[in-house]
Length: 277
Image (cartoon, rainbow, N blue to C red):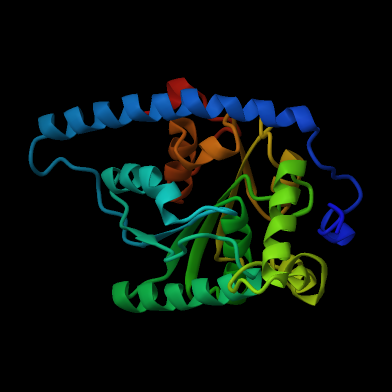
């Protein structure tokens, strides 16, 4: 099998895989993790000094966090902690590793949304990283009764195949393992057949007018073509993060926090470090 496993229709004209050297940009993830650690330590100190009754106002709608390709819920644990400190009630997607059929993952996500919505008595807001954002986009289009809004982070909805060659090799390996008999992994149909086409169509389906949509992207993304992350239906917000770092970069967390509070929308398209409260 060649590295042409991923169907060509997943990379429409106008989009392309990032150059091989682009992955070097992901080295920024180390400094982004360090800035998150500093921010987390500062937040702990602030909590100890905060008088009772002056904590952030609790958001009424729950927030579901969905991890990216090859990742699990633990990858978004730092963001979950930060959002909780800002007054949001967060929930895991129950995805241990996002490596299976995308349609099956979308069905699982829909069931999880039903569970959370019923428990909290309200619609849910979804924050999805990379592939997780694409899954969120499809479910939001199909079930606006469950979803109040979505925030995607580095999610190439417009061209899922426009990703770095290293990711293509990972997909190729999963397909090989699936052929060898390993269960719950991506099959060839998921990346080149009917399943892939249906997933792609779901990620571009029209959204209800009452579903908020913010798409966070970075021109420094070394994994996907950043242009594919700017959905015409979304409010686009640019950050300076690496692709992997979007899961915990303080700038991205600030952008996500603002997007989750529609009463106070972002007034600019770029979030700088100095804007973090």
